[in-house]
Length: 69
Image 1: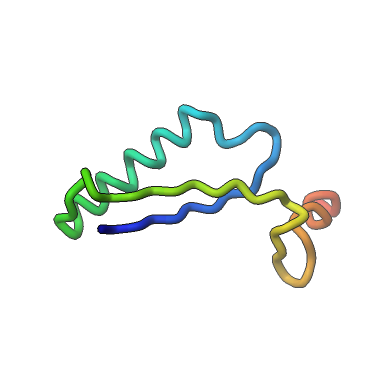
Image 2: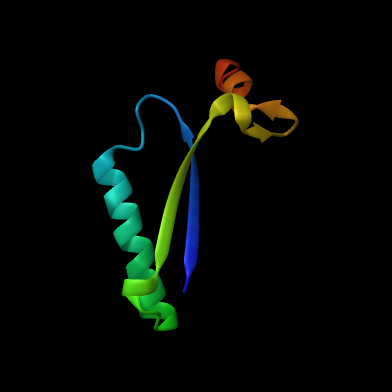
């Protein structure tokens, strides 16, 4: 049973419900096409992470966004 975890930052209302559905469908189709996995048992989870809880280069994404990085 494949398990795919997609993590994105939560900001400005993205991703939309439609975008999430497309990500789930696309990830499932990729595993079917490349690895021959059964789509009925493929699990895709999308986690939205607050930018205060996501760090890059020793800084939160919130701070990096404010600095224009």
